[in-house]
Length: 121
Image 1 (cartoon, one colour):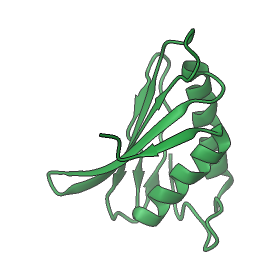
Image 2 (cartoon, one colour; image 1 turned 135 degrees about the vertical axis):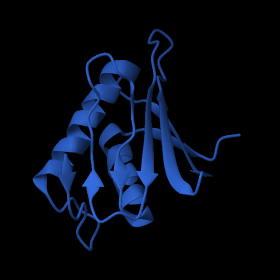
Image 3 (cartoon, rainbow, N blue to C red; image 1 turned 60 degrees about the horizontal axis):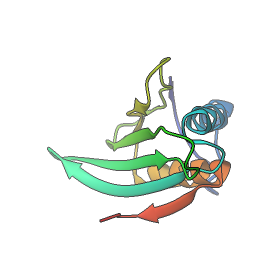
Image 4 (tube, helix red, strand yellow; image 1 turned 90 degrees about the vertical axis):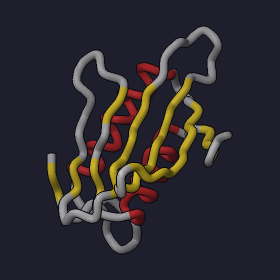
């Protein structure tokens, strides 16, 4: 799905589609990683494109799984918020800038009540 803009000036979802995306992704991550996943977040650049990677892992020993979001920060004028297909545990949505990327990551982290680490080594 494509929408524009993703966020209002105060960092809230500008469109119900954005809120729905956060809710659906959070549900998919919980199903795979448990109620309170760990989120590892780091930025990188590949072939001139910036990315914000978010890897989710379970915090409960009896749960085995993981989920990965690699957000493309492309500078395009549209946001592309995809949902995983059945059986997929990785998605690559596209956002317009780093403000959208970081704010969406923050909203997702808050929705999940995730323990977050930045730039893990």
